[in-house]
Length: 144
Image (cartoon, rainbow, N blue to C red; front, side, top):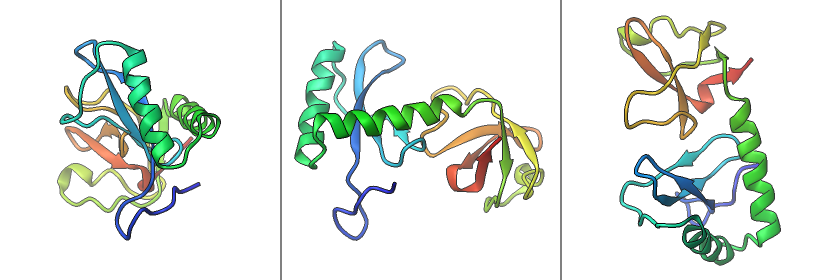
């Protein structure tokens, strides 16, 4: 399922509370099930999950996602995210540079912890390139 466009560049998306590194809550955008959990550093932080959920509910209602549909999308997305551990296989890495030389079609790579301040599963996952961690975009790999 790919969410419908609002205009020619933006899609509708569901928001869900996420506890950040500061112990506060912020709404994250979930664009495509299993693909995008994207915190926005400019977004308001909430003290409680309930406050954050209320903001998410307003956003989701505005874009036409009733509570049941939003919960189903979030549940499906989080279910796929939980499966993204272990190993991926590269389908087509479009990145250039020496650090990406080992990311060839069919090559397998273990997902690693992202560098400080980054997260896995926002728009891709982190693996070891040649000598350093690199991000592989969601469209460039399959989960084994």
